[in-house]
Image (cartoon, one colour):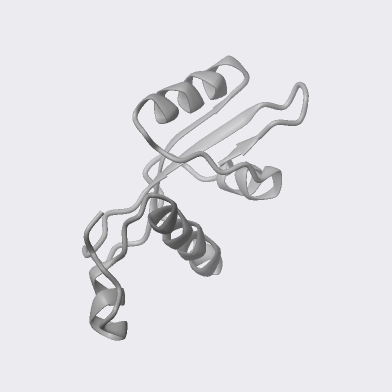
Length: 105
């Protein structure tokens, strides 16, 4: 997630491992030039970048390695689900639940 406000470039990275029943974790955060580098590395590795100044501001207050707060589970889950759809991927649980969703990318 990023904030593109001039002079306030901020980036945070979260990691979620499907199927491990753990909350997403903050794995990167930075401001200014470091934020630019985080974004460049993410894009170079095929990681989708979402721009939301309010969410990135809140997440940047967390410590590296800290779980995402429960209050944000729904928001983060929607972003993760949307990123799956954009990449043509679908969680196994969707195929099981709906029976018509292809899990092939």
